[in-house]
Amino acid sequence: MTIANDITELRHYQQEVARLDRLHLIGEMSAGIGHEIRNPMTTVRGFLQLLGGKDRYARDKAYIDLMLEELDRVNAIITEFLSLAKDKPVEKKIRSLNHKIRTIFPLLRADAMKQGKNIEMELADLPYITIDENEIKQLILNLVRNGLEAMPPGGQLTIKTFQSNGEAVLAVQDQGTGIAPEVLEKIGTPFFTTKDQGTGLGLAVCYSIVQRHNARINIKTGAAGTTFYVSFKVNQVGLEPE
Ligand SMILES: Nc1ncnc2c1ncn2[C@@H]1O[C@H](COP(=O)(O)OP(=O)(O)OP(=O)(O)O)[C@@H](O)[C@H]1O
Ligand SMILES: [Mg+2]
Image 1 (cartoon, rainbow, N blue to C red):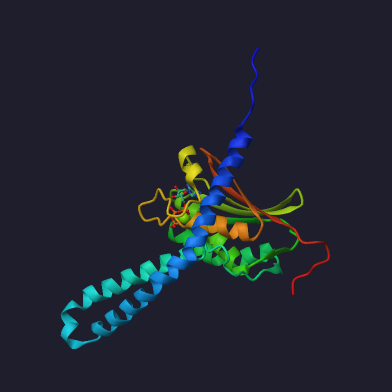
Image 2: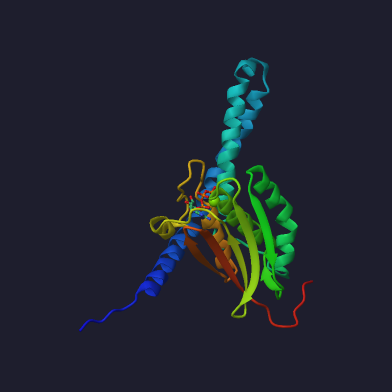
């Protein structure tokens, strides 16, 4: 006689908890360290710029410009890292998710077209949800960029919204090659990346935003592509946006 227990679900929860733990720790550290690094960097950048303007450094102007660019890049990464801070203030308002998607769609389309890829919207009627608009924009951008980066030219990315079990769901679906199990496990860990040019902060930021919105991320992935689902709780009936 044999007994078989399906522990897929259990494993899934364990993974989610581990992911949240990592995020929590990073969130605590990021605020403190970020500021400590940024302040001296601002001084260095200021003096570098000052020197770059002097005649006696004219010959080395190209190097100075390169150093300034690199400092700006570091600064941009720190800015992204800081947005993982646990107690980052958010300004949540009652908003239409579909409206938010429509406003940033032209930007996304431009991004996709530059890479020779397609992007479509399939938006269903949705109740209002309570969101921080900037954070939701960042969330959509990060998911869409990953989807686009996962596909060869000609691929199609679809942004969908629908209702399910009383929740408003945002889905970002790509036709990429899917995510391998060993990658899936580490996804959302800050600085985890499989890309040459990647920073590995995109999904960490997404998980942190989703956490601040009491929402959930589910991932469906296979040979035909990957879909990221973000489920938001819906407001009580009758609430309207300001
Ligand atoms: N839609 C997707 N299809 C396939 N792999 C994905 C997808 N989204 C994420 N990944 C995998 O997860 C890893 C982490 O993604 P994440 O967005 O956090 O970082 P990144 O895209 O590598 O770098 P960054 O977003 O900072 O530029 C990616 O390197 C990639 O391997
Ligand atoms: Mg990314």
